[in-house]
Amino acid sequence: MRISRLYLEGSYQANQTIALPKEQAHYALTVLRLKNDYVIEAFNGQGLLATGKLIVTSRRTADFQIESVEQSNNESPLNTVLVQGISKGDRMDTSIQKAVELGVTAIQPIFTERCDVKLEADKLEKRRNQWQAIVIKCL
Image 1 (tube, rainbow, N blue to C red):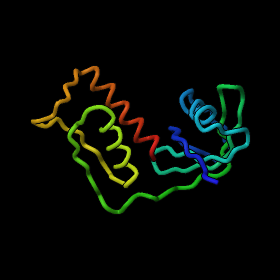
Image 2: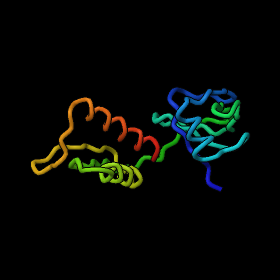
Image 3: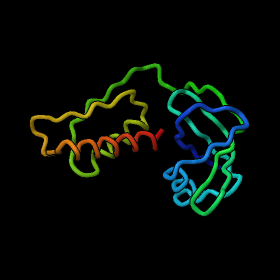
Image 4: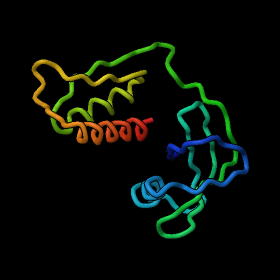
C-alpha cells in the first residue's frame, strides 16, 4: 500500500496535532478518499518528514496527528537547473511535473524569441502560483 504524502508548512513535533488546510483536507478526503486513522506522511519543504495518522473531524475537515518526525535527505547531490521556454496549454504543467519527478533542483521558465505565449502581469502571477502548486504536489 502506498503512503500518501501531503505538503504542510511549519515545524513538526512528535505527538502534535495539526489541522489540515482546506486544500489539503479536500485533497486527502475527496481526491484520495482517505479514511480515519489512515497513515500518511507530511513534509515541509525544509527537510522535515513527519509520519502520522489522518483524523477525520467532519466531512470536509481533517487533522494530522504526528507520531514521529525525522530529517529527510532525499535530495540529489547533483545541482540540476532546467531552463524551460514557456509553452502553451498544459504542456508547461506537464514539463514541470516531469522535471520535479526526475529530481531537477530548479526550474527557470523563460520567454523566448519564438514563444507564442503572451501573459499579462496578473495572469503570469496566476500561472506561477499554479506551477508552484504542481511542484508541491509532485514532491
